[in-house]
Image (cartoon, rainbow, N blue to C red; front, top):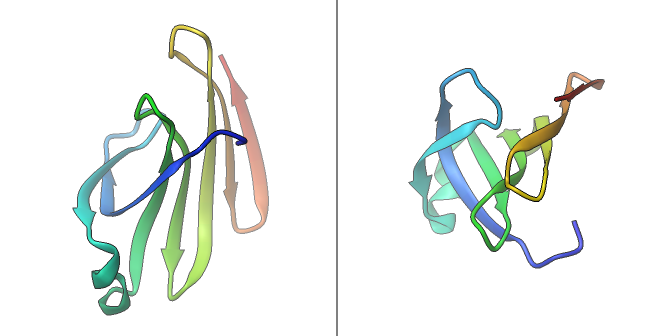
Length: 89
């Protein structure tokens, strides 16, 4: 992830397909009032490259996504409870 990424914060996600669809933006100033939130890192085309579920200040799970030249998701690395799964299409 060498390019300049934009970090945004969300309440949750919807759907079951990857990449996760993060929903309900949170302003950074409001994070101190939340126990759980999602942190998303987006590229210049607004594609989600990394998503982290943050619980009580700790990263509980993370998704990393790679896309092909047409913007189609081709690889996902999912880390949950120190277990890593990788999916490729």
